[in-house]
Image (cartoon, rainbow, N blue to C red; front, side):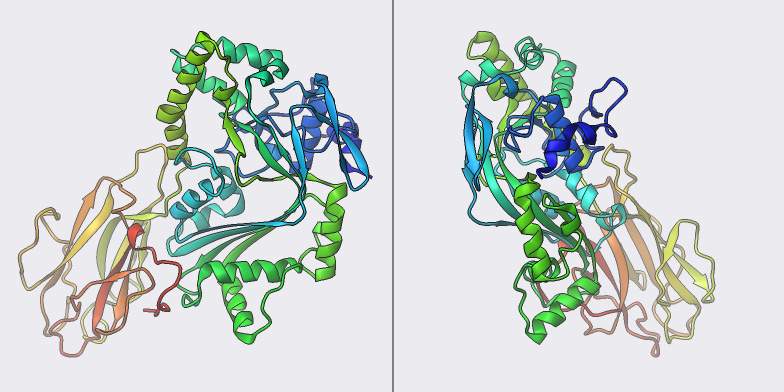
Length: 522
């Protein structure tokens, strides 16, 4: 039996006291599951089981910042599809009603959507551009928050991947033309046509109420998604992350064809052991979806059930969105509103929400040096790097300590450490550094050795300049950890006995590429 036929009973638990589905401003139905949001939308539009699944989503206002291809992120339905002339669409012997302006076409095969990023910033950018939608903004940021833990996205040395397989039944397309205005809901049409584009608050409220875009190309069916965040300091980075992430996905859903070679199995195992992995199915029989990773037969059973439980699960590769101002009237007032909304979106609204949704890793906002024995107290809020900078030299135990800050999209970020200078035997310190060094000789207590002091440089937070982490590398010829830069100055210079130790540091711009030399621990 088709899932959406029991709309009324399904809504009893998700309706507000006045009988309307629960809806959060600017977040659509984000407090509901995909199934609940679909039921709510169909109820609002007074659809029965004859209406083709997906019509509740096509043409709806959508907030592209909220998340990726999910009915829960629909802002508001704006077309009165229940009162529009109907055509019919037949799929596997079952005939549905479909509004005349909407086009439906059958999908003959599944599709794969892959997104990768060597850092959370690059992942956000690639996710936003994975769908053809105009503008270089932080679209679909809500999915980042939902699919990865907040701790993970703020952690350095991680790469991110998202692999989604969509088992489509049909796709829906809504060509945007002036005649569509005849089918707009009266309240939306009035709000659009009467909008005061000289009032930024009015335009902001309009976008928050209806969304900035209209869904014009969507895929209806089921999907399996795997989102992975991998620790680059632990994983075997000779592997190409995109290849092994896809192999892990194929092996994990039971429906793929991952290589059975020992090298492939080892790569997948290494990837999964050093990753945080989030898997989810949408559409299809829920009881079968929970077993999808067990066997190919389980995957097949779930995919065969999608026709009876279809949901809006993906965007079409092209034409998925149209700006909502494309629905303005073709008269002088309509052109004024369209131009005003477009300008406000591009110059104010989208940049503001992109900044608000930006995610950056934690960064160092202060360093210091402590000395004594191995149990010397660490200043409150600091992290002690556990390598004695006098290792083997016979002096005091000397440790580097770091204090980190989390990026705040609303501003007010503390200054960041952007450089440091290791001064040997009184050499001249370049301009721009603190006037005085951290008042601890890094060779403190040794019988011989250079006088070595550490100078800091701080500046207003800039994600491309902020130092994310510092570490210590043993050995002149030892490489720095994956993505780090290594100093050329030996911290035990002149001691005659100490280990050769070198600082190394990580910046956002140095986050390692997808493949490269394997990391070497410090």
